[in-house]
Image (tube, rainbow, N blue to C red; front, side, top):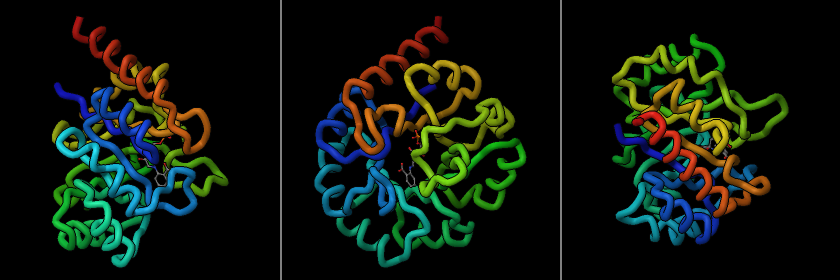
Length: 219
Ligand SMILES: O=C(O)c1ccccc1NCC(=O)[C@H](O)[C@H](O)COP(=O)(O)O
């Protein structure tokens, strides 16, 4: 089975180059002002040019207004919108219709019951991104480097398309793949040398770890 890999929170040409060289299927740009990974829409539009024909450029937003989404879509021209806030199913449908772009809805998970929250959004969102709940005191809904119990995802219907996210890194990706067998994975702080600072060497190391884990499983 193909595995989608999203490297999220990109801000520099060097990091984007490393993500594409490793074989990222998706590259993510953060439009949340409090994040150390924030990039402005015009700069994301410049950066994402390098990904055309190689990886899908994902605009990550948090309860964004129509005006801000208009600006992001107009300046960055994303291939996909990731909604990482408390967007209702109605808002997910509205955003999808307004821009005609695929939408990935992020949901935080800490217990099997959290997966019930996908029900009203199945058939509206094109994909889910399951992330850990932010630690107490964090101002960020994502990018916290915190993992959840991946075994929870084993209870999902096979038809649910999603990315497994939260606290992934080169050391734990093998376990994550084995326990959840996800159709996609997403990583941000696990390939950073400091908050918001992507490290091309860590990105390369992550892709190597993914390949090794997949080779092990195929053997
Ligand atoms: O990464 C951020 O700073 C961020 C801020 C606000 C909303 C979402 C954010 N990240 C979304 C992502 O898709 C991250 O890749 C995901 O949360 C995983 O992050 P990490 O645990 O650091 O790998």
